[in-house]
Length: 147
Image 1 (cartoon, helix red, strand yellow):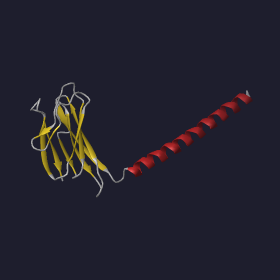
Image 2 (image 1 turned 135 degrees about the vertical axis):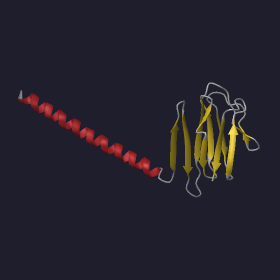
Image 3 (image 1 turned 120 degrees about the vertical axis):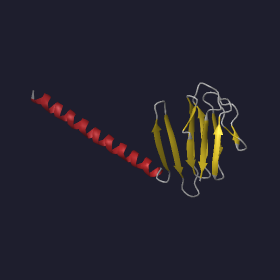
Image 4 (image 1 turned 120 degrees about the horizontal axis):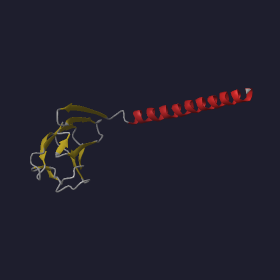
């Protein structure tokens, strides 16, 4: 019986030591990840209404850097509807809808037809408000605000 109690105590000690070792490694990984992204901040504000959630996304980049932001096409909507980015940011639209869509800003850019899973990217090199819509579903509209 005494040997059994010693075996259980040894097993508990080994398990506790392994848990401490694993938690220390995980914390270092989290710290490394946090320090690698300290120069890029992203703020997402979600406003919910009765039918859906709409996001407004703001991307801040460090001087001389570059950044990307994403807009998801789903359920016949652009999400977020409006996004604010710095000059030089590349915005990527991803069609996750079952329908075909376009991303069109008259005189600025046109994705052509995007099938499910397709992406379109545009880099904004000048400041301004760039309104866009889907030519196949004109009620779908959004805007990129470049500061």
